[in-house]
Amino acid sequence: MDASVSSGDQAVLTQLLPGTLLSLEPSDVEAADSQAAAAAPSKAFGAVRSAVHRRLIAELGDRARQMSPYAIVQRASEVLDAYLNVTSVVISREDRDRLFSVLIADVLGYGPLDPLLADASISDIVVNGPEKVYVDRDGRLERVDTHFEDEDHLRDVIQRMVVGVGRRVDESSPICDARLPDGSRVNVVLPPVSVKGPALTIRKVRHKRLEVHDLVTNGTLTEPMVQFLKACVSARMNILVAGGGTSGKTTTLNVLSGFIPRNERIVTIEDVAELRLRQRHVIRLEARPANVEGQGIVSIRQLVINTLRMRPDRIIVGEVRSGEALDMLQAMNTGHDGSLTTVHANSTRDSLARLETLVLMAGAALPSRAIREQIASAINIVVMQDKVRDGSRKVTAISEVVGLDETTILLEDLFLYRLVGIEAGRVVGRHEPTGVIPRCLEALTAAGQAVSLEWFDAEGALGP
Image (tube, rainbow, N blue to C red):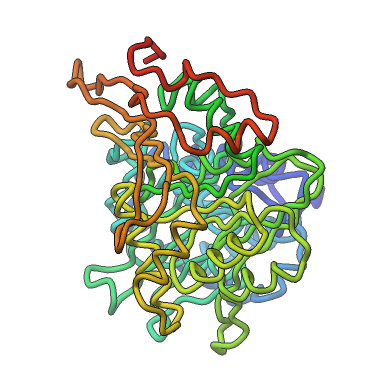
């Protein structure tokens, strides 16, 4: 260890290693930042941190990507001590060490956000300003005692996030979507678009993949519903998972994808890569936004079109949001059955209407009936997912698309979630079959799937 780095600085460095600047995870600096967060910094503390941080960033520049954490920590210690000497700022050794910890958290991590990113119980982080930080735990937003020193500090952390993954956000380009090295999704909105200052939203990646038994245990759906969906996936039915934001669509899509046979070639297409399939033959494609010059964009639609040339057995589109819906439907109708995708919608009926709207966004001059015929012949099963009042996620309906009647796509509900009430702040309800026998039953049986009529028995007790 270099002698110019103090023993206290060595302790911070030890917490950060092994690794390099490009491979550090946010949790690597949790301990250092937690120590710094133990006491709220004064204005003088914040001013020193900000000044030293800017000097360090200005000096290192792009070289920081090639420097080891050892070198960065050493230089940070030197710059901090030089600044304190030149400005004659007098602080205790304890405050100096705390200041150094915050500085390193800002340079090698994401400052005050590091402990929140490391907390497995948090699914989302929402920053509305330096003093307003919220987290989503168990589907409920709550304010936390985490803050930035000022707006400049928040902007510094935002820049650290986006620049570190090759993105840009500033007044000329005030909106940015990015994916952190750990897979977490980041959305940034800056003034003048965000009127009251920078707004930051982080959707954390779930490191522990939820399995089927987890969804049954937490009441998202029942075992008969699981068995029916498993049979549909195995029999190559095309499935649409619909729901609102944060309703758990991607989690359910992940679970459904686990039913795909391991010997099939799967191509996944996502705006931000979140799906984690365990099959051996998986090709993951991710859309690419424009670079800082506004060039190089690769859209979901381009990826869907290209995927058809990649000999896929299954196509999984993380979410259809625009004209790619037309290409997805055409793929489903031309031999690429067994495909899966999600869409934002408030009900099963709305999900099909939404698909129709998205097809129109492709610019194809198709009459409404022709689009509905495409949808009715392409989609076999619609799974509706909601986040209910207590923040829990429920599959509220599984419906079968059974055809087209004049201008209306016909749906039959197979399973529904019946809301009973609320007790002690928790939603009380029950998943029930409607008693309708699916018309695809013959196709499932022909595909070798063992289907029990008891799954659809409206009189049976099929679980909570």
